[in-house]
Image (cartoon, rainbow, N blue to C red; front, side, top):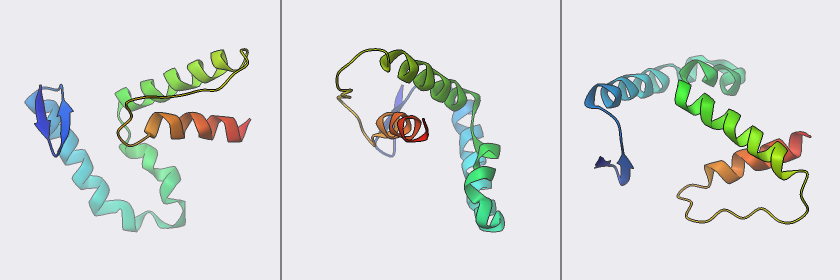
Length: 91
């Protein structure tokens, strides 16, 4: 585990290098993607990120059968809450 730019990372050095190459490729190409840039971002998403989105979708569907509020604690950027919120707005 190491801290990179303020975030704790649990990845091998080769994974970190591959992610940095992917990030640089995104930075190099985002202006070329045109008005559908958000749709084309899927080109740069990792397997782990897809798994996380699918997990959050499953969690959201499970939560919808119970009354109450959804709270998330200890968030850094609020990405999980924002993703679940997008599921809610699309249903």
